[in-house]
Amino acid sequence: MSIALLGLAACMVLTSLAMLKNMLTQKLGSLRDPLQVYNTLQSIDVLPLRMRGWIFSTIVGFANPYARTINFRITELRKGKACGVMKETKTISNPFRCVHAAALITFGETVGGLALFTLLGKKDRAILTNITAEYIKVSRGLLTASSIVTPIKDRDATEITTHVLIKDASFETVSKLTLTWKVDLKD
Ligand SMILES: *[C@@H]1O[C@H](CO)[C@@H](O)[C@H](O)[C@H]1NC(C)=O
Image 1: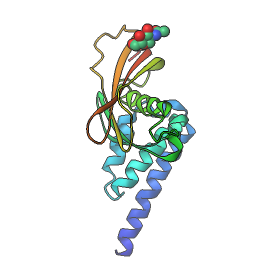
Image 2 (image 1 turned 90 degrees about the horizontal axis):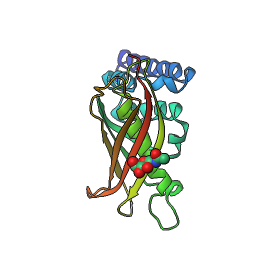
Image 3 (image 1 turned 120 degrees about the horizontal axis):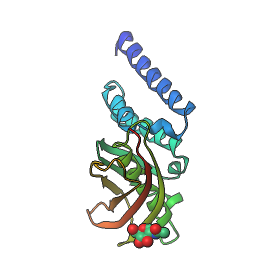
Image 4 (image 1 turned 45 degrees about the vertical axis):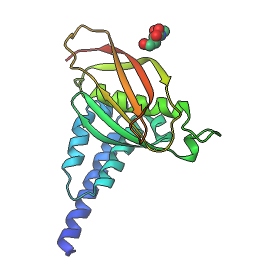
């Protein structure tokens, strides 16, 4: 690689780190527009794909510190949709070698929250008030979560219910989550 290219790559990494720092100095609201952050990262071609994924997860981790307890990556984020993967690790497994129920909840809340936030404006607020999980199958290995939220038509709504589906590597549903959000839509 030429020096110029290396310089450019270093510059891009620094830019991303600066962006990360900006995110850090703000609070949870930093991820009020997760889609913009995600798309910006995706457009930085010189950053390896893995690094973009890692940076985004790290940003999510700062906005929602509890998400740092699980090893996850967001694989898709667009208006009204979020998908992610979570790897089973020793720390999130219980003695029966399956993913702990609380880790599934954290994973589901993270993906479900991102999906909803893609539909919110800068001044809109959403707080999780109820989360229920149905455990359908023992969960092991690599899990994927997806959440699709229909566009919010009723701007006077005070409550929104969303769903997250968690599947295992053989595409079988291991858990279904229902999330209720108290919303304050201003935009
Ligand atoms: C929480 O959500 C579940 C599933 O939608 C529902 O059955 C339950 O009644 C809710 N609990 C409260 C306190 O609203």
